[in-house]
Length: 291
Image (cartoon, rainbow, N blue to C red; front, side, top):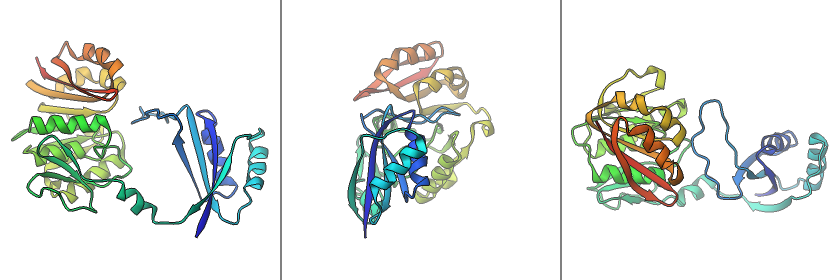
């Protein structure tokens, strides 16, 4: 079967309206794409971040007259849409095509992330079995990659750890596979907690990982706190993470752009001996020890 794609460039203020209009006028689905390689990661509560330049793509049945759709959408929005194009799209198994782009990845010496479509390249390694999904964290982004490399270089053998902003659970699972006793996984998003539990089951470590919304979690001092979120919430959480850290406990922070590093470091230096552990592309990972 053949489909038609209607592709319209727009800005962050119009993307939602345009998306709704396309759905109202017969689109089977609508996808939003970044046009300028602008990173948008986990939103802060109550916000829905959008790329400043966004491509809105509506999927229509092959018999659809896209010019008619454009006229209808223009009437709906009461404005002209001068820049648009239509493309034919052959039907295929899109989930399988997406999965085929996701290959086993190595982090450090021993830690691997392996999708379900592959056998682990090194069966004796610490293999995190993980497929891409809705929750953030598959190891492909530098922020996650650096945390995994830190874990590989500093195996938390025998430790009870905290993974704050757990996303897919990738860091908690990696820590367990590298020898941690137990992981407390915390996230604002209930979908992330579902993903973490499902991935823990897949990796046969569900008995060692417990999930919480932030309000459900009681403060438990830990020898290791991992947080791969964003700079702004990391700054706000500096005192809280200090309370969660044992004396001489370690903290690993990621989701920080290089130009934000000094501000984050300043928030943590009253509580931790902390510095930049690694930089990858425009992102940095900080690591420190509780004073």
